[in-house]
Image (cartoon, rainbow, N blue to C red; front, side, top):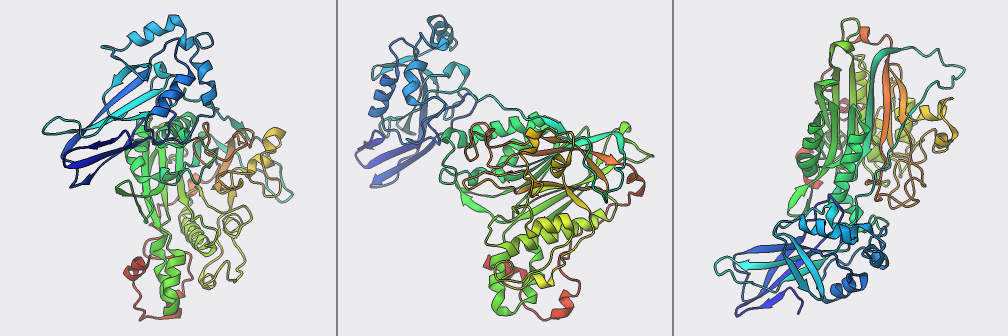
Length: 590
């Protein structure tokens, strides 16, 4: 029987408690997972859980051997990680007063006396300081280098009697929150001029803005199996959320586009924290949810913009699944189930039209506007038809917005490599349709429009084209594709999947956030202690080119409302009426 079992006259109570990581980090809340179950004649009686947190007391006798000895006597359910920054065989040195000033005799007394009503408990030959009785605990700088202990016991509501023995979890020594590794903005300067290019128009002086695009890796995808190279403590949401938030705020971007923002985390963390730093926000979640931790959750795309820089004019939302139904209707009945399976993926996009605020932004009596689009395209490489369907309908809708003379920024995780068909469609405005079983197994692409009229450029290609950027930065670019060598480095190999596209007739790239290479990220797959996503952030600073403001027209209606822009206009006429296949049936199949 384990330390958490208790045999009573009628029921045996079992307590199971675990931590996502055994290595606490200063400033990151520790939230234990606790399950109380009963065996025998019934369920546990009504009860409360009593928690007590302790910190190892600093004494000259405390060393790694004692901590390990104590751990071997306790029922610890999380035996996952040993902190690579401070492995267990270095604990003796860390806890040695002769080698660590935190444990020097002169520092021990003030640290211990900083707690009111300090209670020392001596167990298993080690003295512990009581820290508190809440379920969660946030380690402080006073805890650095010391192990923590959490005790839990269920107590009967009516009698006050313990329903089990005390269940104990012991942590590794608390570590300091790793220092950030800031990235700088690089001035792109003059670009190499091709033989066919015209003279670059001058930008409108004084009107510059920056946009950040970042897939932050939703917690529901941050599993140990998928990210085995990441220390468990650096994979917990309690750590990653703080590190990501610090990174985002540190960039000071005027517009922030995030992908894989978990729905509950937008409500509880990103929206209130970004608002506290002067940002308004819009969020659109995916249309497919998963059930985990007793709730349905999903992820989505969020756009934040600085209140002192922009105001929201209009918002457009795009649910790709809603534009699947004309495709379903055009196919023979025996293919309709398969098209739902292949194309209905729950992905979304959100588009904002923003207008600059402040009298200093006025030009010719008008305030400049910008369209900001954010999306996350389906990831599975086995569904090239789904990727293409989403990208074409996304871009064809944006084309209608662009026709109102509104400059566009297109941010997102496109899940498409440079030179792939979706990438070519965006950059080149067309792609040659090749019908084969891999790209188009159902033959739907012959009914899609593979052209658009926008002149879209990729912001980071400016880095490779610039004559003023040093060779160290250019070495981080792929000379064959003109894009960064990687923007994603998960469990597989490094890939470029993320982009900031823009209408090059309206906007000019002024600066770019420096890229990372394998050396910057430690040579291993992401996330890491320094970088808390498996993607890296991209950021560009833009200025408006002269001439576009005077052509600014009214705001267009939602280009995706009631139609599928990427399909040929003759589609419904070709297939006639009378198809009984409804959107409800397609949703049931998904």
